[in-house]
Image 1: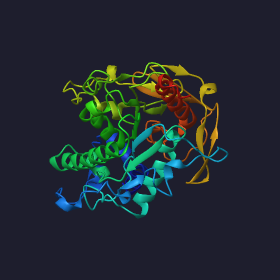
Image 2: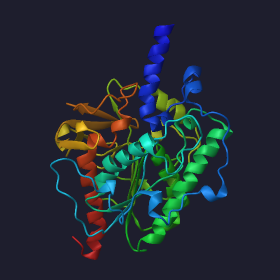
Image 3: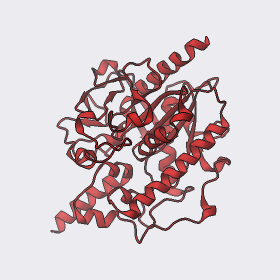
Image 4: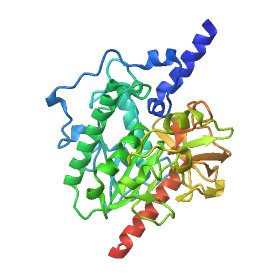
Length: 373
């Protein structure tokens, strides 16, 4: 019994490190639920506690910031110097792993802040060749909110989304009305971005370069019609959605599908496995396959959380019934591969160079009619 409890503890600690991954699982193990559930009930925050997105302190990254983590590049890559033709709005995954509240403070410091900054650096950084990034701090839902179907959990998720929406509206007010936009997220961040695509459908009309909804399931029929968007079918297409969830064979995706299939999508229609969107980031197309030679760079740590290099032609991938299956000589990325050979933590890192090129190709398509190379 003691050995089993020890193994459960190790298992939980591994998952906690990447708390946003919990969003995809509805575990039945009551031990895990008790360990993850925030204490007490959801408490409505004071009215004057909302983040003030007119101030730089409410953002992890923005163009005016002196130490902007989204400007980071891997070792050996040239620093980015661009004319700011595109604006990217990026929302980071769960980084607050405490149980003392249902929502993190928007200005969470210490470990949660360091994790958020690292995600902005290594994920949003993929877009810095063609854009400037805005990455808001927000009162993210604690990871335990994803384990429960309760009023407390839903209120926590709604509060987090309210902040993301307010940040996006402020972002829109700060950029020229003609500037094209990329939206991107991961895990909890992607969940909020998907909802935002529906609620700000009109504001994004004719401005969206692409939406990268990574590490979160997207229904082609149950979600996308509510956004007015379609899956990306070529690497030059604009105004479309990319989404993938990375696994390696033998892949056990049951925990994802059991949590997602049958839930109501943004359209109100029940979601199904057959309509789950899978984009191959190596090709930028839906339900595609590509060998490792197509991979322009996997982000591999260089002995530090803030240093990494790109290794090309190491990882191939193909779509299989809604999931992205990785293959090839996968470099050592870290110890946080989840049960079922789930590479959720590394959804961006596995394909960093190709995501960068994909964004560049779509931006080029957008700018071509304007005579901008």
